[in-house]
Length: 281
Image (cartoon, rainbow, N blue to C red):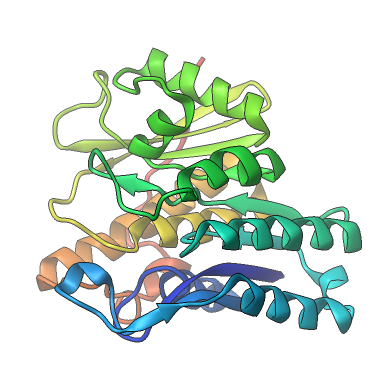
């Protein structure tokens, strides 16, 4: 399995490609990482150094891969944090070039916009995600805040989540994974994840682990894409959610600000606890 992953990079910690690449490699995928930024660490750590790469630089990296004929062997493109709105146009071109070289290739768009009720990306990026990238996507993996923003609809109940997901389907993605859902029907102390495809809706419910985990969305998008390519939406939902629970559980137990992706790497291959996905009529 070959995956072209276009997202951010940090030298310290695990967000963006630094969150997605290793789990994919641990599962056996070849990952062609193209980094949209190179930062010393997550900006939320009280400061950082580094830079967002120019769109032309990222386009050159993708062009070099294409010129050697490797896009024909690419099974999927994964995108996340863009850095600048101009990079979104480069990602769109990369997706189109990949699909031209291999019509069977999928595009998984993790529409990184914000969380916790606020947008944390630069101006123009949310609109690029919504208007340019999501129409090209086969899979979209928004969190609860992003799903609500992208569809301009509330996501406070299962019925509202269904409607928002249906709106997102109409924009392009045939498969939608909605994460970090705390709905009216969600029991206290739990989170819901929903996957929708082909008129079917599946739910996986995992225990809530208190804390703020930067990179969790990047990791689960990568895990879901990998398992989707191998086994389809329902198994991908259960397996990715179970692996994430194990990773977050170990991270929280250690009191770490960064995901313990290396220490907890066995969770990617053999989750210590399995949470099944159930189809919701």
